[in-house]
Length: 169
Image (cartoon, rainbow, N blue to C red; front, top):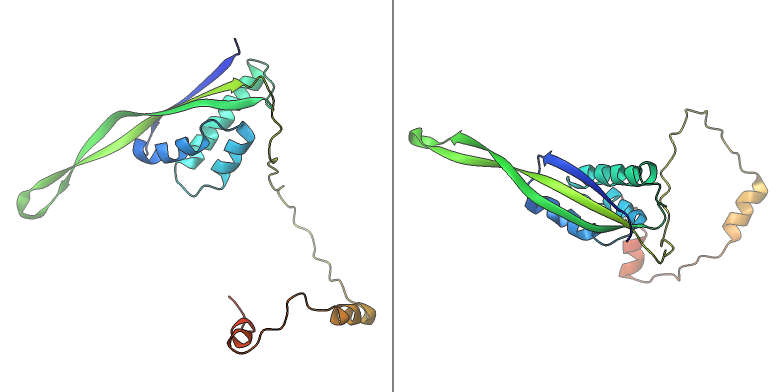
């Protein structure tokens, strides 16, 4: 039986319904693909889930000595935890109850027997050090070469010519 790595995130201050949208998108993916999905997802819950995934990967690597290239997300579950109950004052002395919901997220990683090659590798940009920008001056021959190069796009006529010659923002 293969080794399973479990990581838990408790009391995440985001409603479980919103967290499940992101969790469902990465379930069953390899860790490289799941990490890429989370990096570019525009949901608030993707940040904490990405942090949890990285923690689970570090646990697998350091504690269980598993190969990170073969890991995939076997399951990810999002449960509701006790909610905070608050009141919001309303008109004529009334009050409305507010339920501030929170989530527990559990992620299970497992090593895949048939190691598929990832479709892509994630390369994070390095922190750039401040360097002086060097101006590159073009010689006259370089300018002539760029001017003589034929256009890749056929010329537009009529309305389209007028439409696409405008500068876009």
